[in-house]
Picture 1 (cartoon, rainbow, N blue to C red):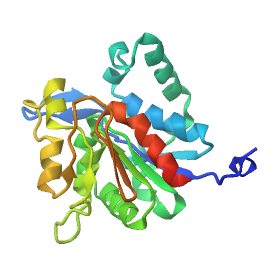
Picture 2 (picture 1 turned 180 degrees about the vertical axis):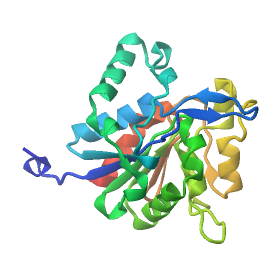
Picture 3 (picture 1 turned 90 degrees about the horizontal axis):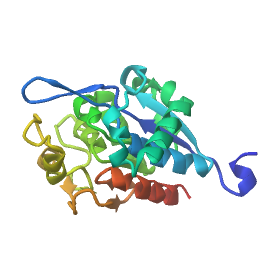
Length: 240
């Protein structure tokens, strides 16, 4: 049985994840990181439950590293849910068999989604393949979702003249206040909210850690981990 049996067409959704297992801090030390579990799993479950297909892509096609800190019980409403999320990641073949980001053809997909974690600050923020994909996705009108530190990838979406493709767009992204409360603001080489603002992107800041989603045309962005599930709802609306 497929989506058509339920009266809708199954869509193919591209998840672009970091390939970085560390984030280089201002003093040169490497902070272990990767992608944030909830930000990948909540949308994954929502899209799969709706009958859609998911393909994961990473720089170089490496298996995306999980930020193990994102499985802490206190960050997932208790150990039971933390274990459930870990189980989803362990059993989801898509995360174990990524394609190379450089091989991705946007025409093959109906929507694109970028989860966060500090990993994107290390690689996707300067990845030209990702930048070109984001520029094309925005221009295509296809649903494009980006959450938390995922918007770091928007920094690589620049044209030949240096102009950012997302300049003038309203987004939600991990804020300076949240980075401060997380204990990294004084350790980071740069802060996401600052860099996005410098690129001409309009960051719509709300209360730290509360769900906050911005819809600007085909672009749907979320501020933090708690925003990933409501972001998925908005993307599903756009997929019809």
